[in-house]
Length: 168
Image (tube, rainbow, N blue to C red; front, side):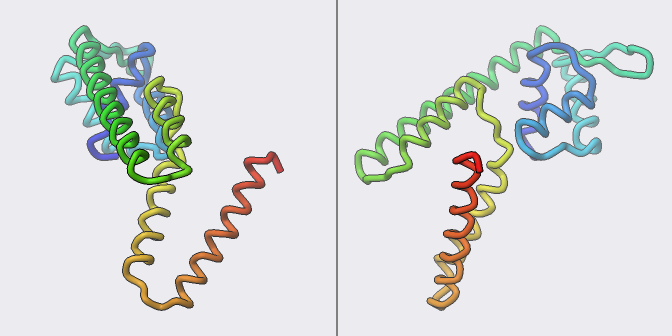
């Protein structure tokens, strides 16, 4: 979450004024992780000091809105994101030209959705942890029996996931 909370907060506020609670819900929906109040509220305070957001009291709620500077910063962050996605797409095309990889089209679809801000990232943290674990075991484990056990677990998980895909 570190380093990504500020851009996510800017993104949340692009749709309009929100409470800190609403921002936390937005972040959780997008990433699968709810930011702690110890991370979110100090960030909100610093963003107010930077004149990126302003706040107004509404009863016992604090309503947060992007300022003109905040809108500029949100646009700058979005431009950086689009540039990163473009470079990633170019790298994928290069990879595809060198290797025959059947998942490239799926990656392209994910990139397309990310560019359009229509990609929920809720499973990505767990997917990254899984890839890290699999690759670490594959690189560091010489015991064939353990590798076969790992392959069986992956096969079983894949079977269960296909059931979800097929609506079962």
